[in-house]
Length: 302
Image (cartoon, rainbow, N blue to C red):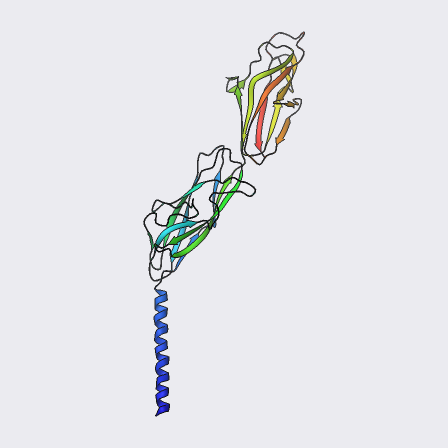
């Protein structure tokens, strides 16, 4: 009798354990089970500081819920202790940016290290469903930003009102500032047929500083090239008459007998002016009339 009672008790205990196991599994299946996916772990914005007015792009995040209950929360961003701002190795520059959840209109920029989790309405990801969130990133590059790659890792999550994080995904924000340079002329000149023209007036031998400069704006280093159509001679059109002359760009003498170039090496943005100085050669015994030459200045980022 004692033996049979013990066997029945043991069987009852085993059966009761099985009921507990089935209840725990059902509860687990009923929970929110969220993952956050992006088409890329780097969100890249390409920007030419000398051509583009804005640096803005929109990116997609897919929130998938494989659980049996909805996942409710707000999109949140965090820097995990890093200072706010895109930066480049070896640079002290921090480039500001903004992030916005386009559906809710909430500002999710982690300016203080983390965005405000109470900003905007909650997002609901249905059970066994998904939602695509559109995130706008707008970078505000400072003036004279040097070319290069500026980055910051932002941790994007869906966070419940009680602070619980349903899921989190690290995204590297990237601003690619392109190497670029532009060249122009400023000071005293006119345009004839669209071509900038400097009137030298009465030609006399000697050095003359012009009230005209060549300027360069660049995002870094550059190569400037100068060519003279007449190889350093002012020629009288339709004749063999000419007057030799020389040219300086700032303090740099230019050899105009052949194509001439020089490099400016820099990893910083530059704004350089090159005042023009000419030295007119011997004019004695030259035929009266108009003498001219065409100079071509070109610039290339390096």
